[in-house]
Image (tube, rainbow, N blue to C red; front, side, top):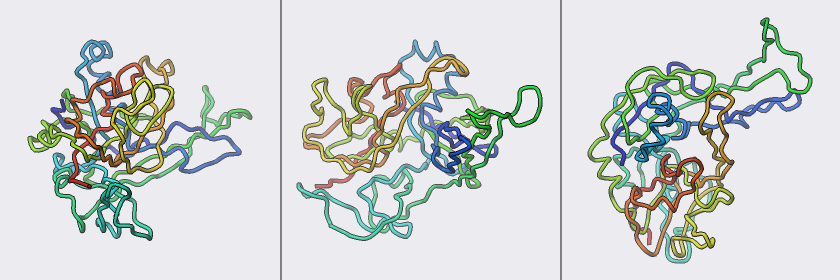
Length: 326
């Protein structure tokens, strides 16, 4: 399964837009934010190095993310906090449990955004544990469209002349982190839009992390990557059979609003095909099942949608076991 840890340290800004363009009448600031880049974006680096044909013939490719870590300690990378953990003032205040009918304890009030926790503490989640916020900041700025033959703004009444780039600045000493089944040579690569550069390093995945990934998901588990379930036409909160019946009997799910998910597949430049727009269950979603499940990497590919490739290739819904929530 996953054998390597890929770290990407930006050489300046990174690209954080979802590809939206501006019109003169609609100057929106953060509507197009999409960060950090998905595992499908990382696989583009591998396709550029190994070739698309090699990745098509070999079906053993697998990626997962996005995560982040400190450059000096990449093996202890940070993953999204499970949604049954209520965070306040940067620490877990309460952990919700399923009593068979509802989540308890019933607590009112507002809580912080869930944040991230180190992978080394996943099996030791407890109240009072420190949670880290997003280690990046957005810096939106406008790009003018220029004339082809001279450096002056295009005068186009229908298209507009501005493009909004949601540039992202990571804090010093922070890098993006992904899991991979194959190595990638170290070096500088263009990653994401606008030609931004990253310094890529490849590490052998630590034994403790491999052992965690090989543990059975059990009856209680949480996703650490976005989960896309259902067909190419419909999106669900869990894997479904052809008759629109859940593969997991009577699942209990604790989640938030779905997030848009899309990627480009094949070709080069403007000839690349854009996948069908889908909705993903966000990372951190908690599931409670009646029957235990095997480790994520053994789940059948039939559980995952397929568009060009099975979405399992990109770590769809990578899940880790949680303590008993019943």
